Image 1 (tube, helix red, strand yellow):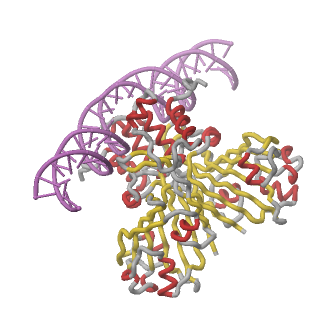
Image 2 (cartoon, rainbow over the protein chains, first blue to last red):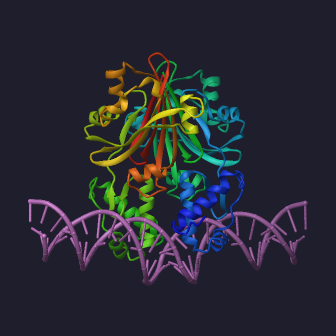
Image 3 (cartoon, chains in turn yellow, red, brown, green):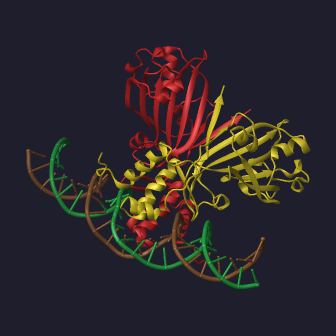
Amino acid sequence: MRIETTKAVTAIGQVLQEQLDHGLLAPGSKLPAERKLSELFGTTRITVREALLQLEAQGQIYREERRGWFVSPPRLAYNLMQRSHFHAMVSAQGRVPSTEVISARLQPASVAVCAWLQLPALSSVIQICRARRIDERLVLYVEHYLNPQFFPGILDFDLNQSITELYARHYDLHYGRVRFEIVPTALSVDAAAALRVSVGSPGLRIARVNYDQHERLIDCDLEFWRHDAIHVGVDVV
Amino acid sequence: MRIETTKAVTAIGQVLQEQLDHGLLAPGSKLPAERKLSELFGTTRITVREALLQLEAQGQIYREERRGWFVSPPRLAYNLMQRSHFHAMVSAQGRVPSTEVISARLQPASVAVCAWLQLPALSSVIQICRARRIDERLVLYVEHYLNPQFFPGILDFDLNQSITELYARHYDLHYGRVRFEIVPTALSVDAAAALRVSVGSPGLRIARVNYDQHERLIDCDLEFWRHDAIHVGVDVV
DNA sequence: AAACAGTGCTGGTCTAGTCCAGATAGGTAA
DNA sequence: TTACCTATCTGGACTAGACCAGCACTGTTT
């Protein structure tokens, strides 16, 4: 079949797509270098790059800075109704989670955080920034903002573990009502740096505002997911 | 302040960002042509284009094919818990909705649709494809798939109106349980064509599987939203 | 064994153009 | 008025290179 009538980027995309569909390129495996591909397809690097960017937008492939392009692993199913934390959720889907703390400190709250936590101006909040991996791949950057009055001394704990469990074990606090807000947008500068992707990469921002079992507003999270790492499920009864 | 140390695309992005933030470029207004901008910033069109693509990824601006770049209007708040249909939701937020039917017919169900609607192989389904606008701007492409046994003669009605209301008025069917699945991905070829954007544009795919008041699986929708047109809210109790 | 210095390879960024097709607006003829 | 041209402007697609910074591997030195 001739594909010369189609434009080049589409054609390149289709060829790679076919390889992906038939499993010739396994998840996690590396694609040939951009220069190699441009030679293979008889075109420029810019054109190849455009095709790769389209596959990236579809979530089929992803890149690691200056390391190359890789085939995306399957998306994680993130069900908002099952109140499960990252570690449990990832493990339940037969994959390996890990977390690293980037920073944790008491600091003045930004305007946005004051609004979310319904705090007066110039309040202090505890900010915890963490990066999380699935099967070694960086997929999520989270900023937690805790109302400090509920969490004395929390910064002394090991924050690599689940914060949800920390709440339960040491503060007897459990999540009650939760409000989610999901926005498809580019990753923030901080998120892009933490996930080691180029700034402006597409992402999914999920903001959570959490109440405890006594209906008190205790904390909020700002999650930045790689756009190709999850699909979100919601069951409404 | 000198910005020459920053890379060019970032610098261009920041300048445009500033104009947007201060409302010098109103929502819906047109940006100068790419060639004009490259002249203005003293660089190539490719570089300007990259900066524009980044702002597009953030949802700040959007393009209409061969017409130009425009400032994005505010996102529509899409609350999954309020069971409201498109027209009502858009109107409630002080904006003007409209719908046009692209196609409506009985056809063999695809594998994916058979699975969603739990139909046997080679079933027939009613497919209704529609494009929807907010304030004249194309933002949503929907494919509805109805189990034909519940909707005799529905293709004879005016399908530009709300299908939810049609269900209620003529079939006494009301939505009960709903399952949503949200995936950030590129728009499908059909969706891109209907929304008149270039293929491969980022989008948000929301699949709904709907049950009626008697817990019967009656239909499903496949919605493709422009990624910058909505933010999704969910309240979990 | 551990630390270091090269070195080639990778994507990231950018220049300076070309050609094409659809959108638009102005003018002309029916 | 209506219909049809047509010139111009727009983004879309593409070529053929360049230089840079970070990564990974290799071979040497300590």
